[in-house]
Length: 267
Image (cartoon, rainbow, N blue to C red; front, side):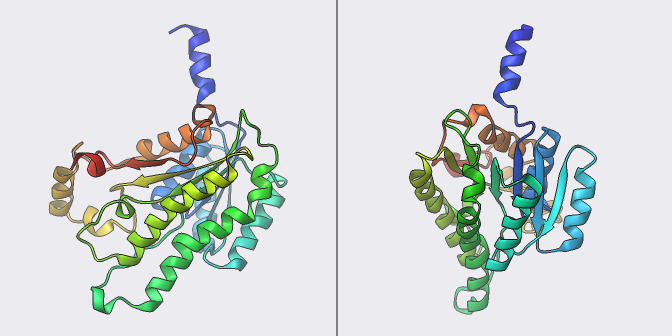
């Protein structure tokens, strides 16, 4: 490949200097995404409810680039306001990439599923995505252009596409709603140089899936169930996020990308 070709390809996927917020960015998929963006040269704010986790993650990722930690509970209006203020203070009110990743799950038998758990997941997994996106719209619009739109990337789940054996009713319902919300927001913002897309991860290692990854037999059975024969890794999620955040993904909006090794489409 010639130098010119290399520069062209590199430029297509370049996110250096862009500003990004990653909610739920201190563990699991969120941490993978945040690290990938920092390593690619973006200036990143990671957020979660736990102050120490935010501080530790910011310290860890600052070895690779620019990263700040902002504790905030995005399931509440107060937490959203904290992040909005942080974007103003840290990024001078300009945001290029918003990754709505914060989420939780809950499993319980159908007739025992608690109202409190349902409300918690709706507030965090769905309402928080909507509320934070709306709150940061002015920052996303600032500096966005048709050639280089601002990007909203919502992290859904294959649980919002297909029914699994787990009794995680609120989780699957909220993730399906996030997928629809993504399309609705994409339609509304398509003329404002703000793209909105969703990634629906399959099986990645996180706190939510620890019960599988900590059991060698369960992990082996899971690998055998996935058509591609393995669970997802850091490069898988960070590659798709970088694509969506770069010039290469500038003409894509309203899309739902199953990132699952073929589980949705091949089983």
